[in-house]
Length: 516
Ligand code: B12
Ligand code: SF4
Image (tube, rainbow, N blue to C red):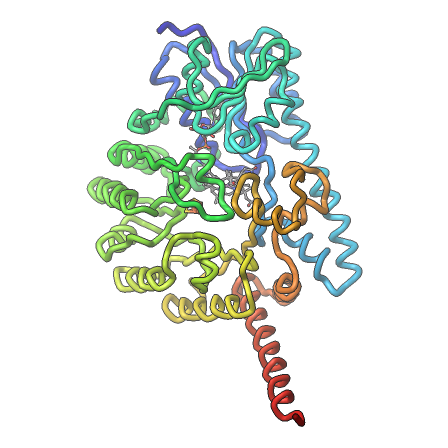
Protein backbone atom coordinates (compact mmCIF):
# COMPACT_ATOMS: atom_id res chain seq x y z
CA UNK A 1 0.00 0.00 0.00
CA UNK A 2 1.42 3.42 -0.88
CA UNK A 3 1.88 5.95 1.85
CA UNK A 4 -0.26 9.08 1.74
CA UNK A 5 1.64 10.92 4.44
CA UNK A 6 4.83 12.77 3.62
CA UNK A 7 5.74 14.22 7.00
CA UNK A 8 5.04 13.62 10.68
CA UNK A 9 5.92 15.78 13.64
CA UNK A 10 5.89 13.83 16.91
CA UNK A 11 5.43 15.98 19.99
CA UNK A 12 6.22 14.43 23.35
CA UNK A 13 4.01 16.28 25.81
CA UNK A 14 5.76 17.64 28.92
CA UNK A 15 6.42 15.37 31.89
CA UNK A 16 9.30 14.96 34.31
CA UNK A 17 12.39 14.30 32.26
CA UNK A 18 12.35 10.65 31.29
CA UNK A 19 13.53 8.97 28.09
CA UNK A 20 10.64 8.99 25.58
CA UNK A 21 10.96 5.32 24.66
CA UNK A 22 7.37 4.73 23.53
CA UNK A 23 7.27 7.39 20.84
CA UNK A 24 10.79 6.44 19.72
CA UNK A 25 9.66 2.84 19.11
CA UNK A 26 6.72 4.15 17.09
CA UNK A 27 8.82 6.55 14.96
CA UNK A 28 11.49 3.91 14.39
CA UNK A 29 8.88 1.38 13.27
CA UNK A 30 7.23 3.84 10.88
CA UNK A 31 10.62 4.70 9.41
CA UNK A 32 11.41 1.02 8.82
CA UNK A 33 8.03 0.40 7.18
CA UNK A 34 7.71 3.69 5.26
CA UNK A 35 11.25 5.08 4.87
CA UNK A 36 10.07 7.85 2.54
CA UNK A 37 8.18 9.70 5.28
CA UNK A 38 9.98 12.68 6.85
CA UNK A 39 9.73 12.51 10.64
CA UNK A 40 10.75 14.87 13.45
CA UNK A 41 10.46 14.55 17.20
CA UNK A 42 10.02 17.54 19.50
CA UNK A 43 10.30 16.67 23.19
CA UNK A 44 8.54 19.35 25.22
CA UNK A 45 9.86 17.82 28.45
CA UNK A 46 13.21 19.33 27.45
CA UNK A 47 11.86 22.80 26.71
CA UNK A 48 11.45 25.50 29.37
CA UNK A 49 7.75 25.74 30.29
CA UNK A 50 7.57 29.39 29.25
CA UNK A 51 8.95 28.62 25.76
CA UNK A 52 6.94 25.50 24.91
CA UNK A 53 4.12 27.18 23.06
CA UNK A 54 6.53 29.30 21.02
CA UNK A 55 8.83 26.38 20.15
CA UNK A 56 5.89 24.24 19.07
CA UNK A 57 4.49 27.10 16.98
CA UNK A 58 7.89 27.58 15.27
CA UNK A 59 8.17 23.88 14.44
CA UNK A 60 4.66 23.72 13.09
CA UNK A 61 5.17 26.70 10.83
CA UNK A 62 8.60 25.59 9.67
CA UNK A 63 7.67 21.95 8.95
CA UNK A 64 3.96 22.16 8.13
CA UNK A 65 3.62 18.38 8.77
CA UNK A 66 0.77 16.28 7.36
CA UNK A 67 0.38 14.64 10.74
CA UNK A 68 1.11 15.90 14.24
CA UNK A 69 1.38 12.96 16.63
CA UNK A 70 1.35 13.69 20.36
CA UNK A 71 2.71 11.29 22.96
CA UNK A 72 1.16 11.74 26.41
CA UNK A 73 2.76 9.75 29.23
CA UNK A 74 1.37 10.88 32.56
CA UNK A 75 -2.00 12.41 33.19
CA UNK A 76 -2.90 11.34 36.70
CA UNK A 77 0.60 11.45 38.05
CA UNK A 78 0.37 11.60 41.85
CA UNK A 79 2.67 8.95 43.19
CA UNK A 80 1.82 7.47 46.58
CA UNK A 81 5.48 7.26 47.59
CA UNK A 82 8.17 9.49 49.15
CA UNK A 83 9.71 10.54 45.83
CA UNK A 84 6.53 12.41 44.97
CA UNK A 85 5.72 15.68 46.80
CA UNK A 86 2.05 14.74 46.85
CA UNK A 87 2.64 12.09 49.52
CA UNK A 88 4.25 14.57 51.96
CA UNK A 89 1.41 16.98 51.45
CA UNK A 90 -1.29 14.39 52.07
CA UNK A 91 0.55 12.99 55.10
CA UNK A 92 1.02 16.40 56.67
CA UNK A 93 -2.53 17.46 55.93
CA UNK A 94 -4.08 14.30 57.37
CA UNK A 95 -1.71 13.30 60.14
CA UNK A 96 0.62 16.06 61.25
CA UNK A 97 0.06 17.06 64.87
CA UNK A 98 1.29 20.56 63.96
CA UNK A 99 -1.29 23.08 62.75
CA UNK A 100 1.43 25.03 61.00
CA UNK A 101 2.37 21.99 58.93
CA UNK A 102 -1.25 21.27 58.11
CA UNK A 103 -1.58 24.85 56.90
CA UNK A 104 1.60 24.60 54.82
CA UNK A 105 0.32 21.32 53.35
CA UNK A 106 -2.91 23.07 52.37
CA UNK A 107 -0.92 25.80 50.63
CA UNK A 108 1.35 23.26 48.87
CA UNK A 109 -1.65 21.25 47.76
CA UNK A 110 -2.99 24.34 45.99
CA UNK A 111 0.29 24.57 44.03
CA UNK A 112 0.29 20.87 43.17
CA UNK A 113 -3.35 20.86 42.08
CA UNK A 114 -2.90 24.01 40.00
CA UNK A 115 0.10 22.46 38.23
CA UNK A 116 -2.03 19.39 37.64
CA UNK A 117 -4.92 21.40 36.22
CA UNK A 118 -2.70 23.68 34.14
CA UNK A 119 -0.62 20.89 32.63
CA UNK A 120 -3.72 19.08 31.42
CA UNK A 121 -5.30 22.21 29.97
CA UNK A 122 -1.99 23.17 28.32
CA UNK A 123 -1.69 19.79 26.64
CA UNK A 124 -5.12 20.20 25.07
CA UNK A 125 -4.04 23.77 24.23
CA UNK A 126 -1.08 22.42 22.19
CA UNK A 127 -3.48 20.27 20.18
CA UNK A 128 -5.75 23.25 19.60
CA UNK A 129 -2.76 25.27 18.42
CA UNK A 130 -2.13 22.66 15.73
CA UNK A 131 -5.73 22.80 14.62
CA UNK A 132 -5.58 26.61 14.47
CA UNK A 133 -2.29 26.89 12.57
CA UNK A 134 -2.73 23.87 10.31
CA UNK A 135 -6.46 23.27 9.81
CA UNK A 136 -5.92 20.40 7.34
CA UNK A 137 -3.41 18.49 9.44
CA UNK A 138 -4.59 15.34 11.14
CA UNK A 139 -3.77 15.01 14.84
CA UNK A 140 -2.89 11.74 16.55
CA UNK A 141 -2.58 11.26 20.31
CA UNK A 142 -1.10 8.16 21.97
CA UNK A 143 0.86 7.17 25.07
CA UNK A 144 0.16 5.51 28.41
CA UNK A 145 -2.01 8.32 29.80
CA UNK A 146 -4.19 8.10 26.72
CA UNK A 147 -4.33 4.31 27.02
CA UNK A 148 -6.05 4.75 30.38
CA UNK A 149 -8.11 7.86 29.71
CA UNK A 150 -8.64 7.58 25.95
CA UNK A 151 -12.36 8.32 25.89
CA UNK A 152 -11.83 11.45 27.95
CA UNK A 153 -9.04 12.61 25.61
CA UNK A 154 -11.27 11.95 22.59
CA UNK A 155 -13.97 14.15 24.11
CA UNK A 156 -11.59 17.06 24.78
CA UNK A 157 -9.32 16.97 21.72
CA UNK A 158 -9.83 18.97 18.51
CA UNK A 159 -11.69 17.56 15.50
CA UNK A 160 -10.00 15.17 13.06
CA UNK A 161 -7.99 13.53 15.82
CA UNK A 162 -7.16 9.85 16.18
CA UNK A 163 -6.69 8.76 19.79
CA UNK A 164 -4.60 5.58 19.97
CA UNK A 165 -5.13 3.27 22.93
CA UNK A 166 -2.31 0.92 23.93
CA UNK A 167 0.60 0.03 21.71
CA UNK A 168 0.95 2.37 18.79
CA UNK A 169 3.09 0.89 16.02
CA UNK A 170 0.42 -0.79 13.88
CA UNK A 171 -2.18 1.90 14.58
CA UNK A 172 0.25 4.63 13.52
CA UNK A 173 1.18 2.72 10.37
CA UNK A 174 -2.49 2.58 9.41
CA UNK A 175 -2.78 6.32 10.06
CA UNK A 176 0.22 7.30 7.93
CA UNK A 177 -1.23 5.04 5.25
CA UNK A 178 -4.32 7.22 5.13
CA UNK A 179 -6.44 5.66 7.92
CA UNK A 180 -8.65 3.90 5.39
CA UNK A 181 -7.98 0.53 7.07
CA UNK A 182 -7.45 1.39 10.75
CA UNK A 183 -5.50 -0.95 13.03
CA UNK A 184 -5.18 -1.19 16.81
CA UNK A 185 -7.63 0.30 19.28
CA UNK A 186 -8.59 3.86 18.42
CA UNK A 187 -11.14 6.57 19.02
CA UNK A 188 -11.65 8.88 16.08
CA UNK A 189 -13.17 12.31 16.39
CA UNK A 190 -14.17 13.32 12.89
CA UNK A 191 -14.41 16.78 11.30
CA UNK A 192 -17.86 17.34 12.77
CA UNK A 193 -16.85 16.24 16.28
CA UNK A 194 -18.54 12.83 16.13
CA UNK A 195 -16.56 10.15 18.02
CA UNK A 196 -16.31 6.52 16.91
CA UNK A 197 -14.45 3.69 18.61
CA UNK A 198 -12.63 0.72 17.09
CA UNK A 199 -11.55 -2.23 19.27
CA UNK A 200 -8.33 -4.03 18.56
CA UNK A 201 -8.93 -7.17 16.53
CA UNK A 202 -5.38 -7.99 15.46
CA UNK A 203 -2.25 -8.83 17.46
CA UNK A 204 0.87 -6.85 16.80
CA UNK A 205 3.77 -9.24 16.33
CA UNK A 206 6.55 -7.95 18.57
CA UNK A 207 9.14 -9.79 16.51
CA UNK A 208 8.64 -6.94 14.04
CA UNK A 209 10.16 -4.61 16.64
CA UNK A 210 13.78 -4.97 15.57
CA UNK A 211 16.63 -3.14 17.33
CA UNK A 212 16.03 0.60 17.24
CA UNK A 213 17.99 2.41 14.56
CA UNK A 214 19.55 5.00 16.85
CA UNK A 215 21.45 6.94 14.15
CA UNK A 216 18.04 7.52 12.55
CA UNK A 217 16.57 8.52 15.92
CA UNK A 218 19.41 11.03 16.37
CA UNK A 219 18.64 12.48 12.96
CA UNK A 220 15.00 13.19 13.80
CA UNK A 221 15.59 13.93 17.48
CA UNK A 222 18.91 15.69 18.12
CA UNK A 223 17.96 16.13 21.80
CA UNK A 224 18.26 12.34 22.12
CA UNK A 225 21.74 13.01 23.56
CA UNK A 226 20.40 14.75 26.62
CA UNK A 227 19.10 11.40 27.93
CA UNK A 228 22.22 9.33 27.52
CA UNK A 229 23.47 9.78 31.07
CA UNK A 230 20.19 8.53 32.49
CA UNK A 231 18.21 5.31 32.43
CA UNK A 232 17.25 4.39 28.90
CA UNK A 233 14.01 2.45 28.62
CA UNK A 234 14.20 -0.79 26.63
CA UNK A 235 11.18 -2.96 25.97
CA UNK A 236 11.55 -6.74 25.87
CA UNK A 237 7.92 -7.84 25.93
CA UNK A 238 4.37 -6.60 26.33
CA UNK A 239 1.48 -7.88 28.41
CA UNK A 240 0.88 -9.29 31.86
CA UNK A 241 -1.39 -12.25 32.67
CA UNK A 242 -1.60 -11.50 36.42
CA UNK A 243 -4.47 -9.60 37.98
CA UNK A 244 -3.07 -7.84 40.99
CA UNK A 245 -5.93 -5.88 42.55
CA UNK A 246 -4.40 -2.43 42.28
CA UNK A 247 -2.73 -2.64 38.88
CA UNK A 248 -3.82 -1.67 35.42
CA UNK A 249 -0.67 -2.52 33.51
CA UNK A 250 -2.46 -5.68 32.40
CA UNK A 251 -5.17 -3.47 30.90
CA UNK A 252 -2.75 -1.08 29.22
CA UNK A 253 -0.69 -3.89 27.69
CA UNK A 254 -3.23 -6.73 27.60
CA UNK A 255 -3.08 -10.06 29.39
CA UNK A 256 -1.24 -11.94 26.69
CA UNK A 257 2.55 -11.84 27.03
CA UNK A 258 4.31 -11.28 23.72
CA UNK A 259 8.05 -11.09 23.23
CA UNK A 260 10.66 -9.31 21.17
CA UNK A 261 13.51 -11.32 19.70
CA UNK A 262 16.33 -11.64 22.29
CA UNK A 263 18.95 -10.91 19.60
CA UNK A 264 17.24 -7.64 18.65
CA UNK A 265 16.99 -6.56 22.29
CA UNK A 266 20.67 -7.30 22.82
CA UNK A 267 21.64 -5.44 19.63
CA UNK A 268 19.63 -2.43 20.82
CA UNK A 269 21.34 -2.36 24.20
CA UNK A 270 24.75 -3.03 22.67
CA UNK A 271 24.33 -0.03 20.37
CA UNK A 272 23.30 2.16 23.29
CA UNK A 273 26.31 1.04 25.25
CA UNK A 274 29.08 1.02 22.63
CA UNK A 275 27.99 3.84 20.36
CA UNK A 276 26.47 6.23 22.90
CA UNK A 277 28.14 5.27 26.17
CA UNK A 278 24.85 4.49 27.90
CA UNK A 279 25.46 2.95 31.31
CA UNK A 280 21.98 2.23 32.63
CA UNK A 281 18.99 0.42 31.17
CA UNK A 282 15.49 0.14 32.61
CA UNK A 283 13.49 -2.71 31.10
CA UNK A 284 10.17 -0.95 30.72
CA UNK A 285 8.04 -4.11 30.61
CA UNK A 286 5.08 -4.36 32.97
CA UNK A 287 7.24 -7.12 34.48
CA UNK A 288 10.70 -8.02 33.19
CA UNK A 289 10.27 -11.58 34.47
CA UNK A 290 7.15 -13.05 35.93
CA UNK A 291 5.71 -16.17 34.28
CA UNK A 292 7.66 -19.32 33.49
CA UNK A 293 7.75 -18.46 29.79
CA UNK A 294 8.86 -14.90 30.42
CA UNK A 295 11.63 -16.17 32.69
CA UNK A 296 12.82 -18.41 29.85
CA UNK A 297 12.77 -15.35 27.60
CA UNK A 298 14.81 -13.40 30.16
CA UNK A 299 17.26 -16.28 30.18
CA UNK A 300 17.69 -15.99 26.40
CA UNK A 301 18.04 -12.20 26.55
CA UNK A 302 20.73 -12.46 29.22
CA UNK A 303 22.55 -15.14 27.22
CA UNK A 304 22.74 -12.66 24.34
CA UNK A 305 24.08 -9.99 26.70
CA UNK A 306 26.76 -12.36 27.95
CA UNK A 307 27.72 -13.48 24.46
CA UNK A 308 28.18 -9.86 23.40
CA UNK A 309 29.87 -8.87 26.68
CA UNK A 310 27.49 -5.93 27.02
CA UNK A 311 28.63 -3.63 29.78
CA UNK A 312 25.59 -1.91 31.30
CA UNK A 313 23.77 -2.03 34.57
CA UNK A 314 20.08 -2.71 34.43
CA UNK A 315 16.88 -2.88 36.42
CA UNK A 316 13.17 -3.36 35.84
CA UNK A 317 10.13 -4.65 37.70
CA UNK A 318 10.72 -8.27 38.68
CA UNK A 319 8.84 -11.17 40.17
CA UNK A 320 11.01 -13.97 41.38
CA UNK A 321 8.49 -16.81 41.02
CA UNK A 322 10.52 -18.86 38.59
CA UNK A 323 14.03 -17.84 39.54
CA UNK A 324 16.66 -20.57 39.31
CA UNK A 325 20.25 -20.40 40.56
CA UNK A 326 21.43 -20.23 36.95
CA UNK A 327 19.21 -17.27 36.06
CA UNK A 328 20.15 -15.54 39.31
CA UNK A 329 23.83 -15.86 38.36
CA UNK A 330 23.16 -14.53 34.86
CA UNK A 331 21.15 -11.60 36.19
CA UNK A 332 23.96 -10.56 38.47
CA UNK A 333 26.65 -11.24 35.86
CA UNK A 334 24.90 -9.05 33.26
CA UNK A 335 24.68 -6.03 35.56
CA UNK A 336 21.39 -6.16 37.43
CA UNK A 337 21.83 -3.28 39.86
CA UNK A 338 18.61 -3.51 41.82
CA UNK A 339 15.78 -5.91 42.50
CA UNK A 340 12.54 -3.94 42.18
CA UNK A 341 9.47 -5.80 43.36
CA UNK A 342 6.18 -5.60 45.21
CA UNK A 343 6.67 -6.83 48.73
CA UNK A 344 4.58 -7.57 51.76
CA UNK A 345 5.58 -9.92 54.53
CA UNK A 346 2.15 -11.44 54.88
CA UNK A 347 0.68 -14.20 52.73
CA UNK A 348 -2.81 -12.94 53.68
CA UNK A 349 -2.11 -9.58 52.03
CA UNK A 350 -0.53 -11.30 49.02
CA UNK A 351 -3.70 -13.36 48.62
CA UNK A 352 -6.05 -10.46 49.31
CA UNK A 353 -4.39 -8.45 46.56
CA UNK A 354 -4.31 -11.55 44.33
CA UNK A 355 -0.59 -11.03 43.70
CA UNK A 356 -0.38 -14.71 42.82
CA UNK A 357 2.80 -15.89 44.52
CA UNK A 358 3.95 -17.56 47.68
CA UNK A 359 5.85 -15.53 50.24
CA UNK A 360 7.98 -18.52 51.23
CA UNK A 361 8.95 -19.02 47.62
CA UNK A 362 9.79 -15.31 47.31
CA UNK A 363 12.00 -15.49 50.41
CA UNK A 364 13.70 -18.61 48.97
CA UNK A 365 14.34 -16.68 45.78
CA UNK A 366 16.03 -13.91 47.78
CA UNK A 367 18.26 -16.53 49.40
CA UNK A 368 19.00 -17.90 45.94
CA UNK A 369 20.12 -14.47 44.76
CA UNK A 370 22.28 -14.07 47.82
CA UNK A 371 23.94 -17.43 47.20
CA UNK A 372 24.59 -16.88 43.52
CA UNK A 373 26.80 -13.86 43.09
CA UNK A 374 25.00 -11.12 45.00
CA UNK A 375 27.34 -8.34 46.10
CA UNK A 376 25.71 -5.02 46.97
CA UNK A 377 22.75 -4.63 44.59
CA UNK A 378 19.82 -2.68 46.04
CA UNK A 379 16.75 -4.61 47.11
CA UNK A 380 13.86 -2.21 46.48
CA UNK A 381 10.66 -3.32 48.14
CA UNK A 382 7.51 -1.60 46.89
CA UNK A 383 5.34 -2.04 49.97
CA UNK A 384 1.59 -1.84 49.37
CA UNK A 385 1.16 -0.57 52.94
CA UNK A 386 -2.29 -0.44 54.46
CA UNK A 387 -3.90 -2.07 51.42
CA UNK A 388 -7.38 -3.53 51.97
CA UNK A 389 -7.00 -6.40 54.44
CA UNK A 390 -3.95 -4.97 56.22
CA UNK A 391 -4.10 -5.49 59.98
CA UNK A 392 -1.76 -4.91 62.90
CA UNK A 393 -0.61 -8.53 62.53
CA UNK A 394 0.06 -8.37 58.80
CA UNK A 395 1.96 -5.10 59.24
CA UNK A 396 4.03 -6.71 61.98
CA UNK A 397 4.78 -9.66 59.72
CA UNK A 398 5.97 -7.28 57.01
CA UNK A 399 8.30 -5.62 59.50
CA UNK A 400 9.67 -9.02 60.50
CA UNK A 401 10.32 -10.13 56.94
CA UNK A 402 12.04 -6.85 56.11
CA UNK A 403 14.33 -7.41 59.06
CA UNK A 404 15.14 -10.89 57.66
CA UNK A 405 16.12 -9.15 54.42
CA UNK A 406 18.31 -6.67 56.33
CA UNK A 407 20.14 -9.64 57.80
CA UNK A 408 20.45 -11.32 54.41
CA UNK A 409 21.61 -8.38 52.29
CA UNK A 410 22.81 -5.78 54.80
CA UNK A 411 20.46 -3.08 56.08
CA UNK A 412 22.03 -0.44 53.85
CA UNK A 413 21.11 -2.40 50.71
CA UNK A 414 17.43 -2.90 51.48
CA UNK A 415 15.14 -0.04 50.55
CA UNK A 416 11.56 -0.47 51.75
CA UNK A 417 9.68 1.92 49.51
CA UNK A 418 6.68 3.38 51.37
CA UNK A 419 4.18 2.84 48.59
CA UNK A 420 0.48 3.13 49.21
CA UNK A 421 -2.08 1.92 46.78
CA UNK A 422 -3.02 4.55 44.23
CA UNK A 423 -6.60 3.74 43.25
CA UNK A 424 -6.75 3.46 39.47
CA UNK A 425 -9.79 3.27 37.22
CA UNK A 426 -11.12 -0.12 36.24
CA UNK A 427 -9.05 -2.06 38.80
CA UNK A 428 -10.55 -4.61 41.24
CA UNK A 429 -9.48 -2.43 44.16
CA UNK A 430 -11.47 0.47 42.74
CA UNK A 431 -14.54 -1.78 42.50
CA UNK A 432 -14.02 -2.98 46.06
CA UNK A 433 -13.72 0.55 47.42
CA UNK A 434 -16.81 1.69 45.54
CA UNK A 435 -18.64 -1.34 46.99
CA UNK A 436 -17.48 -0.37 50.47
CA UNK A 437 -18.71 3.20 50.00
CA UNK A 438 -15.17 4.62 50.23
CA UNK A 439 -15.59 6.08 46.73
CA UNK A 440 -18.85 7.12 45.10
CA UNK A 441 -19.84 4.95 42.11
CA UNK A 442 -19.82 8.02 39.84
CA UNK A 443 -16.56 9.53 41.15
CA UNK A 444 -14.32 11.01 38.50
CA UNK A 445 -10.77 9.57 38.49
CA UNK A 446 -9.56 12.69 36.69
CA UNK A 447 -11.20 15.08 39.13
CA UNK A 448 -9.49 18.28 40.22
CA UNK A 449 -11.19 17.99 43.64
CA UNK A 450 -8.28 17.75 46.14
CA UNK A 451 -10.32 15.73 48.65
CA UNK A 452 -11.08 13.02 46.12
CA UNK A 453 -7.50 13.08 44.81
CA UNK A 454 -6.37 12.62 48.41
CA UNK A 455 -8.67 9.62 48.78
CA UNK A 456 -7.07 8.02 45.74
CA UNK A 457 -3.81 7.72 47.71
CA UNK A 458 -5.32 4.93 49.79
CA UNK A 459 -4.21 4.99 53.44
CA UNK A 460 -7.37 4.69 55.53
CA UNK A 461 -7.89 4.71 59.29
CA UNK A 462 -7.14 3.19 61.73
CA UNK A 463 -3.67 2.13 60.54
CA UNK A 464 -3.36 5.14 58.25
CA UNK A 465 -2.80 7.46 61.16
CA UNK A 466 -0.14 5.25 62.74
CA UNK A 467 1.70 4.87 59.43
CA UNK A 468 1.30 8.55 58.59
CA UNK A 469 2.77 9.69 61.91
CA UNK A 470 5.59 7.12 61.64
CA UNK A 471 6.41 8.50 58.20
CA UNK A 472 6.29 12.15 59.28
CA UNK A 473 8.48 11.43 62.29
CA UNK A 474 10.98 9.71 59.99
CA UNK A 475 10.99 12.69 57.61
CA UNK A 476 11.58 15.05 60.52
CA UNK A 477 14.46 13.07 62.02
CA UNK A 478 16.05 11.93 58.78
CA UNK A 479 19.72 12.36 58.01
CA UNK A 480 19.51 11.25 54.40
CA UNK A 481 23.28 10.72 54.17
CA UNK A 482 23.08 7.82 56.60
CA UNK A 483 19.51 6.59 56.58
CA UNK A 484 16.71 5.89 54.14
CA UNK A 485 13.22 7.21 54.70
CA UNK A 486 11.52 3.84 54.22
CA UNK A 487 13.76 2.07 56.74
CA UNK A 488 13.27 4.82 59.29
CA UNK A 489 9.49 4.71 58.74
CA UNK A 490 9.38 0.94 59.16
CA UNK A 491 11.39 1.24 62.42
CA UNK A 492 8.89 3.79 63.74
CA UNK A 493 5.96 1.62 62.69
CA UNK A 494 7.48 -1.35 64.50
CA UNK A 495 7.99 0.69 67.65
CA UNK A 496 4.38 1.89 67.59
CA UNK A 497 3.02 -1.61 66.95
CA UNK A 498 5.09 -2.94 69.86
CA UNK A 499 3.64 -0.24 72.11
CA UNK A 500 0.14 -1.23 71.04
CA UNK A 501 0.91 -4.82 71.85
CA UNK A 502 2.19 -3.89 75.30
CA UNK A 503 -0.97 -1.89 75.92
CA UNK A 504 -3.13 -4.75 74.64
CA UNK A 505 -1.25 -7.25 76.80
CA UNK A 506 -1.63 -4.90 79.75
CA UNK A 507 -5.36 -4.92 79.05
CA UNK A 508 -5.39 -8.73 79.01
CA UNK A 509 -3.46 -8.91 82.31
CA UNK A 510 -5.83 -6.41 83.86
CA UNK A 511 -8.80 -8.32 82.51
CA UNK A 512 -7.49 -11.65 83.83
CA UNK A 513 -6.72 -10.18 87.24
CA UNK A 514 -10.09 -8.45 87.49
CA UNK A 515 -12.54 -9.96 90.04
CA UNK A 516 -15.04 -12.31 88.42
C1 B12 B 1 8.49 1.55 33.22
C2 B12 B 1 7.59 2.57 33.88
C3 B12 B 1 8.17 3.50 34.74
C4 B12 B 1 9.67 3.53 35.01
C5 B12 B 1 10.34 4.24 33.82
C6 B12 B 1 11.77 3.83 33.62
C7 B12 B 1 12.39 4.48 32.40
N1 B12 B 1 13.56 5.01 32.56
O1 B12 B 1 11.80 4.50 31.34
C8 B12 B 1 9.72 4.35 36.34
C9 B12 B 1 9.70 3.39 37.51
C10 B12 B 1 10.91 5.29 36.52
C11 B12 B 1 8.39 5.11 36.27
C12 B12 B 1 8.14 6.27 36.94
C13 B12 B 1 6.92 6.96 36.91
N2 B12 B 1 5.78 6.55 36.34
CO1 B12 B 1 5.70 5.00 35.27
N3 B12 B 1 5.40 3.45 34.19
C14 B12 B 1 6.20 2.59 33.64
C15 B12 B 1 5.40 1.56 32.80
C16 B12 B 1 5.42 0.22 33.51
C17 B12 B 1 5.90 1.38 31.37
C18 B12 B 1 6.07 2.65 30.56
C19 B12 B 1 6.93 2.39 29.35
O2 B12 B 1 8.00 2.95 29.23
N4 B12 B 1 6.50 1.48 28.49
C20 B12 B 1 7.27 1.07 27.31
C21 B12 B 1 7.01 1.95 26.09
C22 B12 B 1 7.63 1.33 24.86
O3 B12 B 1 5.64 1.98 25.89
P1 B12 B 1 4.78 3.30 25.95
O4 B12 B 1 5.52 4.43 26.48
O5 B12 B 1 3.47 2.96 26.55
O6 B12 B 1 4.52 3.58 24.40
C23 B12 B 1 3.66 2.79 23.65
C24 B12 B 1 2.21 3.30 23.62
O7 B12 B 1 1.86 4.05 24.75
C25 B12 B 1 2.11 4.06 22.35
N5 B12 B 1 2.54 5.45 22.26
C26 B12 B 1 3.33 6.19 23.03
N6 B12 B 1 3.47 7.43 22.50
C27 B12 B 1 2.75 7.46 21.36
C28 B12 B 1 2.54 8.45 20.42
C29 B12 B 1 1.75 8.17 19.33
C30 B12 B 1 1.52 9.22 18.32
C31 B12 B 1 1.16 6.90 19.16
C32 B12 B 1 0.30 6.60 17.99
C33 B12 B 1 1.35 5.92 20.10
C34 B12 B 1 2.15 6.20 21.19
O8 B12 B 1 2.95 3.31 21.50
C35 B12 B 1 4.13 2.93 22.21
C36 B12 B 1 4.68 1.67 21.64
O9 B12 B 1 3.70 0.71 21.46
C37 B12 B 1 3.97 2.22 32.77
C38 B12 B 1 2.82 1.23 32.89
C39 B12 B 1 2.64 0.47 31.62
N7 B12 B 1 2.56 -0.81 31.73
O10 B12 B 1 2.60 1.03 30.55
C40 B12 B 1 4.01 3.17 33.98
C41 B12 B 1 3.26 4.49 33.85
C42 B12 B 1 3.52 5.10 32.50
N8 B12 B 1 3.87 5.38 34.91
C43 B12 B 1 3.03 6.16 35.41
C44 B12 B 1 3.38 7.15 36.36
C45 B12 B 1 2.23 7.98 36.94
C46 B12 B 1 4.71 7.33 36.74
C47 B12 B 1 5.20 8.39 37.73
C48 B12 B 1 4.70 9.78 37.42
C49 B12 B 1 4.82 7.91 39.13
C50 B12 B 1 5.26 8.87 40.22
N9 B12 B 1 4.41 9.78 40.61
O11 B12 B 1 6.35 8.74 40.66
C51 B12 B 1 6.75 8.28 37.59
C52 B12 B 1 7.30 9.45 36.82
C53 B12 B 1 8.10 9.20 35.61
C54 B12 B 1 8.38 10.47 34.82
N10 B12 B 1 9.57 11.00 34.93
O12 B12 B 1 7.51 10.98 34.16
C55 B12 B 1 1.60 5.94 34.91
C56 B12 B 1 1.14 7.06 33.95
C57 B12 B 1 -0.32 7.12 33.61
C58 B12 B 1 -1.18 8.04 34.41
N11 B12 B 1 -1.98 7.44 35.29
O13 B12 B 1 -1.13 9.21 34.23
C59 B12 B 1 1.74 4.52 34.28
C60 B12 B 1 0.81 4.21 33.15
C61 B12 B 1 1.56 3.51 35.44
C62 B12 B 1 0.23 3.59 36.10
N12 B12 B 1 0.15 4.20 37.23
O14 B12 B 1 -0.72 3.07 35.66
N13 B12 B 1 7.52 4.50 35.42
S1 SF4 C 1 1.45 -5.70 39.57
FE1 SF4 C 1 2.87 -6.62 38.10
S2 SF4 C 1 2.30 -8.78 38.02
FE2 SF4 C 1 0.59 -7.69 38.95
S3 SF4 C 1 -0.81 -7.23 37.24
FE3 SF4 C 1 0.54 -5.46 37.52
S4 SF4 C 1 2.23 -5.77 36.12
FE4 SF4 C 1 1.20 -7.72 36.35
